[in-house]
Image (cartoon, one colour):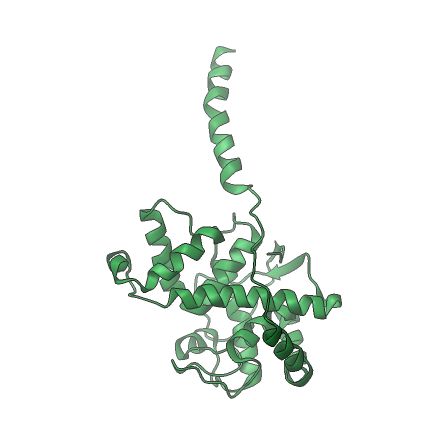
Length: 254
Protein backbone atom coordinates (compact mmCIF):
# COMPACT_ATOMS: atom_id res chain seq x y z
CA UNK A 1 0.00 0.00 0.00
CA UNK A 2 2.79 2.39 0.94
CA UNK A 3 4.64 1.53 -2.28
CA UNK A 4 1.53 2.28 -4.38
CA UNK A 5 1.04 5.60 -2.60
CA UNK A 6 4.69 6.49 -3.17
CA UNK A 7 4.41 5.67 -6.89
CA UNK A 8 1.23 7.72 -7.17
CA UNK A 9 2.98 10.72 -5.63
CA UNK A 10 5.74 10.36 -8.22
CA UNK A 11 3.39 9.85 -11.19
CA UNK A 12 0.91 12.68 -10.53
CA UNK A 13 3.32 15.54 -11.27
CA UNK A 14 4.36 13.83 -14.50
CA UNK A 15 0.73 13.39 -15.52
CA UNK A 16 0.07 17.05 -14.78
CA UNK A 17 3.08 18.05 -16.91
CA UNK A 18 1.92 15.92 -19.83
CA UNK A 19 -1.55 17.38 -19.58
CA UNK A 20 -0.17 20.90 -19.57
CA UNK A 21 2.28 20.15 -22.38
CA UNK A 22 0.06 18.29 -24.80
CA UNK A 23 -3.60 19.03 -24.08
CA UNK A 24 -3.75 22.76 -23.53
CA UNK A 25 -6.09 24.51 -25.94
CA UNK A 26 -4.38 27.46 -27.54
CA UNK A 27 -6.13 30.79 -28.04
CA UNK A 28 -7.20 31.51 -31.63
CA UNK A 29 -4.92 33.54 -33.85
CA UNK A 30 -6.09 37.15 -33.86
CA UNK A 31 -5.75 38.76 -37.27
CA UNK A 32 -5.90 42.40 -38.27
CA UNK A 33 -9.02 43.07 -40.37
CA UNK A 34 -8.54 43.60 -44.09
CA UNK A 35 -8.55 47.16 -45.31
CA UNK A 36 -11.35 48.35 -47.56
CA UNK A 37 -8.96 48.21 -50.53
CA UNK A 38 -7.85 44.66 -49.72
CA UNK A 39 -11.45 43.51 -49.32
CA UNK A 40 -12.44 45.10 -52.62
CA UNK A 41 -9.53 43.49 -54.43
CA UNK A 42 -10.14 39.96 -53.17
CA UNK A 43 -13.83 40.25 -54.05
CA UNK A 44 -12.84 41.27 -57.58
CA UNK A 45 -10.21 38.54 -57.85
CA UNK A 46 -12.71 35.91 -56.68
CA UNK A 47 -14.92 36.96 -59.58
CA UNK A 48 -12.24 37.40 -62.25
CA UNK A 49 -9.26 35.21 -61.33
CA UNK A 50 -10.46 32.35 -59.12
CA UNK A 51 -12.76 30.70 -61.72
CA UNK A 52 -9.69 29.91 -63.86
CA UNK A 53 -8.15 27.77 -61.14
CA UNK A 54 -10.91 26.74 -58.77
CA UNK A 55 -11.43 23.32 -60.35
CA UNK A 56 -7.73 22.65 -60.01
CA UNK A 57 -7.73 23.72 -56.35
CA UNK A 58 -10.70 21.43 -55.77
CA UNK A 59 -9.13 18.56 -57.73
CA UNK A 60 -5.90 18.53 -55.75
CA UNK A 61 -7.71 19.33 -52.54
CA UNK A 62 -9.61 16.06 -53.03
CA UNK A 63 -6.51 14.19 -54.12
CA UNK A 64 -4.56 15.14 -51.01
CA UNK A 65 -7.58 15.53 -48.71
CA UNK A 66 -6.99 19.23 -48.12
CA UNK A 67 -9.58 22.01 -48.19
CA UNK A 68 -9.33 23.63 -51.58
CA UNK A 69 -9.79 26.96 -49.83
CA UNK A 70 -6.50 26.48 -47.98
CA UNK A 71 -4.61 25.72 -51.20
CA UNK A 72 -6.30 28.71 -52.84
CA UNK A 73 -5.39 30.94 -49.88
CA UNK A 74 -1.71 30.05 -50.17
CA UNK A 75 -1.84 30.63 -53.92
CA UNK A 76 -3.55 33.99 -53.48
CA UNK A 77 -0.93 35.16 -51.01
CA UNK A 78 1.86 33.94 -53.26
CA UNK A 79 0.70 35.09 -56.68
CA UNK A 80 -2.76 36.66 -56.40
CA UNK A 81 -3.80 33.75 -58.68
CA UNK A 82 -1.58 35.11 -61.47
CA UNK A 83 0.25 32.21 -63.11
CA UNK A 84 2.79 34.60 -64.65
CA UNK A 85 3.87 35.96 -61.26
CA UNK A 86 7.62 35.97 -60.58
CA UNK A 87 8.97 37.16 -57.24
CA UNK A 88 12.13 39.23 -56.81
CA UNK A 89 13.87 36.06 -55.58
CA UNK A 90 12.96 34.16 -58.75
CA UNK A 91 10.17 31.88 -57.52
CA UNK A 92 7.48 31.34 -60.11
CA UNK A 93 3.92 30.35 -60.82
CA UNK A 94 0.66 30.16 -58.93
CA UNK A 95 2.18 28.54 -55.85
CA UNK A 96 5.57 30.30 -56.14
CA UNK A 97 7.65 27.14 -55.83
CA UNK A 98 11.42 27.49 -55.66
CA UNK A 99 13.55 25.39 -57.99
CA UNK A 100 14.62 23.21 -55.08
CA UNK A 101 11.07 22.69 -53.82
CA UNK A 102 9.82 21.93 -57.34
CA UNK A 103 12.46 19.23 -57.69
CA UNK A 104 11.59 17.90 -54.23
CA UNK A 105 7.90 17.42 -55.09
CA UNK A 106 8.42 16.24 -58.66
CA UNK A 107 7.39 19.39 -60.53
CA UNK A 108 9.24 19.72 -63.82
CA UNK A 109 7.66 23.03 -64.90
CA UNK A 110 6.87 25.55 -62.18
CA UNK A 111 4.99 27.72 -64.67
CA UNK A 112 2.58 24.95 -65.57
CA UNK A 113 -0.46 25.87 -63.42
CA UNK A 114 -1.60 22.29 -62.92
CA UNK A 115 1.84 21.13 -61.82
CA UNK A 116 2.23 24.18 -59.63
CA UNK A 117 -1.06 23.63 -57.78
CA UNK A 118 -0.46 19.90 -57.42
CA UNK A 119 3.08 20.45 -56.17
CA UNK A 120 2.04 23.19 -53.77
CA UNK A 121 -0.81 21.09 -52.35
CA UNK A 122 1.45 18.09 -51.91
CA UNK A 123 4.14 20.20 -50.26
CA UNK A 124 1.69 21.77 -47.80
CA UNK A 125 0.57 18.40 -46.55
CA UNK A 126 4.12 17.08 -46.55
CA UNK A 127 5.14 19.91 -44.22
CA UNK A 128 2.10 19.35 -42.03
CA UNK A 129 3.12 15.73 -41.60
CA UNK A 130 6.66 16.79 -40.65
CA UNK A 131 5.37 18.82 -37.71
CA UNK A 132 5.06 17.06 -34.32
CA UNK A 133 1.92 14.97 -34.06
CA UNK A 134 1.20 15.93 -30.45
CA UNK A 135 0.52 19.56 -31.38
CA UNK A 136 -2.90 21.09 -31.88
CA UNK A 137 -3.76 20.83 -35.61
CA UNK A 138 -3.82 24.60 -35.99
CA UNK A 139 -0.30 24.78 -34.54
CA UNK A 140 0.85 22.12 -36.99
CA UNK A 141 -0.57 24.19 -39.84
CA UNK A 142 1.27 27.27 -38.62
CA UNK A 143 4.50 25.23 -38.68
CA UNK A 144 3.67 23.99 -42.18
CA UNK A 145 2.98 27.50 -43.45
CA UNK A 146 6.19 28.80 -41.90
CA UNK A 147 8.12 26.00 -43.59
CA UNK A 148 6.41 26.68 -46.90
CA UNK A 149 7.49 30.31 -46.81
CA UNK A 150 10.99 30.26 -45.31
CA UNK A 151 11.99 26.63 -45.74
CA UNK A 152 12.03 23.86 -43.16
CA UNK A 153 15.76 24.24 -42.51
CA UNK A 154 15.35 27.90 -41.54
CA UNK A 155 12.40 26.96 -39.35
CA UNK A 156 14.61 24.43 -37.55
CA UNK A 157 17.04 27.28 -36.86
CA UNK A 158 14.20 29.26 -35.30
CA UNK A 159 13.40 26.31 -33.05
CA UNK A 160 17.05 26.11 -32.06
CA UNK A 161 17.00 29.78 -31.12
CA UNK A 162 13.76 29.26 -29.19
CA UNK A 163 15.34 26.55 -27.05
CA UNK A 164 18.26 28.82 -26.21
CA UNK A 165 15.81 31.47 -25.02
CA UNK A 166 13.53 29.09 -23.15
CA UNK A 167 10.70 29.86 -25.59
CA UNK A 168 8.21 27.59 -27.35
CA UNK A 169 8.33 27.98 -31.14
CA UNK A 170 5.29 25.73 -31.46
CA UNK A 171 3.05 28.43 -29.99
CA UNK A 172 2.12 31.18 -32.41
CA UNK A 173 2.33 34.02 -29.90
CA UNK A 174 6.01 33.10 -29.33
CA UNK A 175 6.85 32.02 -32.87
CA UNK A 176 5.65 35.42 -34.06
CA UNK A 177 8.33 37.01 -31.87
CA UNK A 178 11.04 34.53 -32.84
CA UNK A 179 10.66 34.57 -36.63
CA UNK A 180 11.87 38.17 -37.16
CA UNK A 181 15.01 37.31 -35.17
CA UNK A 182 16.03 35.08 -38.08
CA UNK A 183 17.06 38.26 -39.91
CA UNK A 184 19.15 39.60 -37.03
CA UNK A 185 22.92 39.04 -37.25
CA UNK A 186 22.98 39.16 -33.44
CA UNK A 187 21.60 35.61 -33.41
CA UNK A 188 23.64 34.25 -36.32
CA UNK A 189 25.61 31.89 -34.06
CA UNK A 190 22.37 29.98 -33.38
CA UNK A 191 21.68 29.35 -37.07
CA UNK A 192 23.04 26.54 -39.20
CA UNK A 193 21.42 27.88 -42.35
CA UNK A 194 22.10 31.61 -42.15
CA UNK A 195 19.74 34.55 -42.02
CA UNK A 196 16.21 34.72 -43.45
CA UNK A 197 13.44 37.29 -43.74
CA UNK A 198 11.36 36.15 -40.79
CA UNK A 199 9.15 39.24 -40.82
CA UNK A 200 7.90 38.18 -44.23
CA UNK A 201 7.08 34.74 -42.85
CA UNK A 202 4.93 36.29 -40.11
CA UNK A 203 3.06 38.33 -42.74
CA UNK A 204 2.72 35.25 -44.95
CA UNK A 205 1.17 33.10 -42.21
CA UNK A 206 -1.28 35.76 -41.07
CA UNK A 207 -2.28 36.61 -44.64
CA UNK A 208 -2.86 32.97 -45.62
CA UNK A 209 -4.99 32.33 -42.55
CA UNK A 210 -6.95 35.52 -43.25
CA UNK A 211 -7.56 34.57 -46.89
CA UNK A 212 -8.47 31.01 -45.88
CA UNK A 213 -11.08 32.26 -43.44
CA UNK A 214 -12.36 34.78 -46.00
CA UNK A 215 -12.78 32.07 -48.65
CA UNK A 216 -14.57 29.81 -46.21
CA UNK A 217 -17.03 32.61 -45.50
CA UNK A 218 -17.43 33.26 -49.22
CA UNK A 219 -17.92 29.55 -49.95
CA UNK A 220 -19.58 28.21 -46.79
CA UNK A 221 -20.39 24.88 -48.40
CA UNK A 222 -16.63 24.24 -48.48
CA UNK A 223 -15.89 24.76 -44.78
CA UNK A 224 -14.05 21.74 -43.38
CA UNK A 225 -14.31 21.33 -39.62
CA UNK A 226 -12.91 17.80 -39.65
CA UNK A 227 -11.01 16.13 -42.45
CA UNK A 228 -9.21 12.87 -43.05
CA UNK A 229 -5.71 13.72 -44.22
CA UNK A 230 -3.75 11.07 -46.06
CA UNK A 231 -0.31 10.77 -44.51
CA UNK A 232 2.85 11.31 -46.49
CA UNK A 233 6.00 9.33 -45.85
CA UNK A 234 8.46 12.03 -44.81
CA UNK A 235 11.40 9.66 -44.35
CA UNK A 236 12.33 9.83 -48.01
CA UNK A 237 12.35 12.56 -50.61
CA UNK A 238 9.74 11.80 -53.27
CA UNK A 239 10.79 11.68 -56.90
CA UNK A 240 7.21 12.12 -58.08
CA UNK A 241 4.09 13.51 -56.47
CA UNK A 242 2.28 10.72 -54.66
CA UNK A 243 0.00 9.88 -51.74
CA UNK A 244 -0.26 7.00 -49.31
CA UNK A 245 -3.35 5.37 -47.87
CA UNK A 246 -2.62 5.79 -44.16
CA UNK A 247 -5.10 8.19 -42.58
CA UNK A 248 -4.88 10.73 -39.76
CA UNK A 249 -7.30 13.29 -38.36
CA UNK A 250 -6.95 17.03 -38.59
CA UNK A 251 -9.03 19.94 -37.40
CA UNK A 252 -8.58 22.93 -39.67
CA UNK A 253 -9.23 25.72 -37.21
CA UNK A 254 -7.15 28.75 -36.36
